[in-house]
Length: 234
Image 1: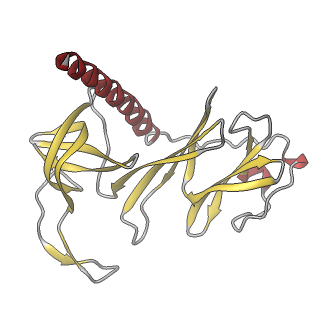
Image 2: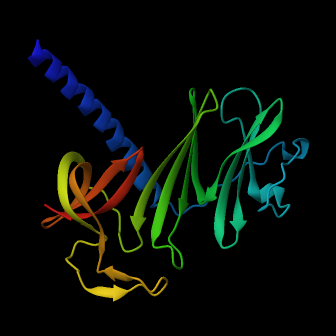
């Protein structure tokens, strides 16, 4: 009986990891996208635009109209410049009017509709004293629940994926690049000391290996539905 339970648990874990593998591959592919997402503002003239601090009144280029939670009401997504970032904001429509359910830096890469809701992917590249880029997926289901998953990676980290992803428990120093750099220097923005290309230290963490370079692994470590990315020695 115990053997049967172990097998069932293994198959369930494998299925969950397979979903993660597919999700990661799809989202990494979005980083290669060069074409700009085209907002569809059809019907915007009949919709009362909610007050939003980033709005420049350029409704045709900044506001996307779409039913995101399959309730028959047109919802709104703002995607435009909002110094110093590009901004994405999501407003869900209801009988009480529009409600802001998401508001963060990032430029829309894709919007995918399903029978269960909508998935919005955006990208906020590193800038200035922000050293990390964020690839953000916001999922809105048919009950209007909003879920966010972020892939966060250092501006020195180039993400590419091999054909085969796999799960592995890892321990060691997580680094932004596949080299050992432990030189201590001052951060030009904060004046605090930092050690080379170290991102952090992990111990017995479950990770998804997306690529390999000699004796280094590029890993995605899942934390509360989001992913920290870095290189670690095998």
